[in-house]
Amino acid sequence: MAYFRGNAEVTLDDLRAVLPFVLHDKLQPDLQAPAFDDPEREALRTDRVSWIRDLFDTACRQYDAAGLDDDDPVGDVLAELARGLDGVDERTVRERLARIEGLLGRWGRTAKLHGDVYEDALALKYAHQRYSSYLEWLRWSGA
Image 1 (tube, helix red, strand yellow):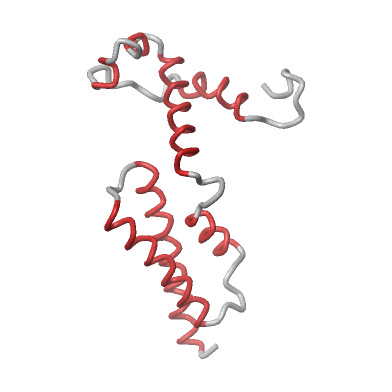
Image 2 (cartoon, one colour; image 1 turned 90 degrees about the horizontal axis):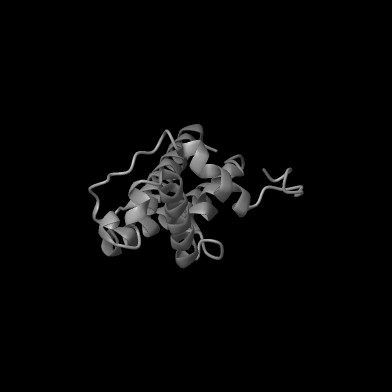
C-alpha cells in the first residue's frame, strides 16, 4: 500500500487502510455489546470494515493517552533483556528483578489487568523468569 501511495516506508495511515481487510474474516463483533447502542456507533453493527477501523483508532488513542512513546517501562525492560545476559553481574540482575517487581506491584495496587496491562504483565513475568533463571545459574556456576 505504501509503495502504491508513493512512499518508501509504511506509515500508520497505510496500516489503518489495510488492517480492516486483513482482519475482516478473523474478528467478529458482539452485536449485543452496549458500545453499539450509541446512535453514532449503531452503523458499525453492519459495517465491519468501519468497526475494525474504529477499534484501531480507539487503540491508537489509548496508546497516545498512555504516553508510551515517551515512557514505556515494559519496553525498556524487554529491550534491556534483548541485549542479552552475558556479563551481567548478580547485583545488576537483582536491580532489574526489583524494577520488574516494583512495576507489577504498582499495577496490582492501582489497576485491573485489562488488555494492554495484562499483556504487559505477561511480558514482565517472562522477563522476571529469565532473570531469575539467570540468577540461579550465576549462583550455581560461581560466576
